[in-house]
Length: 412
Image (spheres, rainbow, N blue to C red):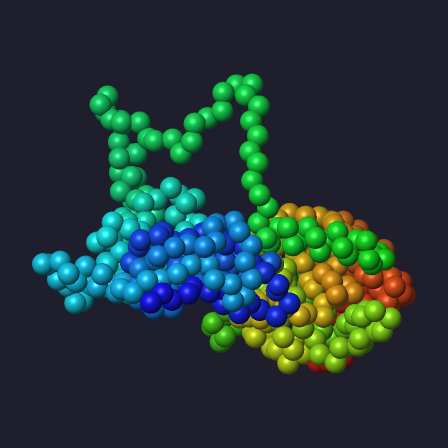
């Protein structure tokens, strides 16, 4: 009797997914909950496990195909994954885990998308990496430890003069010949295609305007320098700049509710909560995880949540719940060196705040020219809903709170 391998229920608002890769092929024995394939939605990569022990009879949907929730993509025949060789004279060791069973069959242990990407980037042999995860699965930390071990072994040899018989290091790819004009065509990932679609959509459907201001970051930098050690000791997380901006933006959103609103048809929806998306760069592209109820979060709570999102983005662990919703967005192009930009609204939101590089510049204070660490701020907004006066005042409010951060603590 065969068992169907089905695509699981997809998150709300996601109609379909694309098969990224199959970890098994027809004829392979698998164990219950062993990862069979990865599927990619518009925002996240999901793993599809085996529903039970068995042998893959056939694969009905190949890599790159679009699939929907509940669709049958493969079938398992009767059999045991880890005990598929029970008919042989030599019984398997009872303590062998899934990874050991896979290795015994000459296969690579199942890898998560983040681990598989790391292995591919460094051209590693996954079978040579010792997994410390559940059932011997290879974790990201195992790959990093393996790389460190390789570097430490290679360092003594690099410090010594190379012997005439030493073999040259293997090149990862042949260098292009002088004057060679190469091209490489690859399909867009679903995430990149979705980003392109949404950005083009908002450019066509919203009346986007951007207003600018600049903020003297000296008060925030002084407060941070004074209290960062005590803050980290007390809360176990570093005090960054983003928590100041989240708190300042939340207060500004309270004062200007139209910036926290959105348009739905011919209606304006005023949100009575503050969910701020933080644009994060991940290996798969730009993603925007959402901080919920920022008016209830402390500075430490904001920093902890942002750190957690950063780690999940790197490992590919962000969920649809992390990425859905949001009433306002903050994007920090300054971490990449951007001095000034016009950020694009994240629909259906009506505004986005762009942070930029902190740069020492001469400014006039009380008739004197002084050097201050300045940052340009940009607020892109939908002019259909937000008038220029509200946009300018909203940005000025953020500037005032950051230049006198005690107001954030005193709620004045």
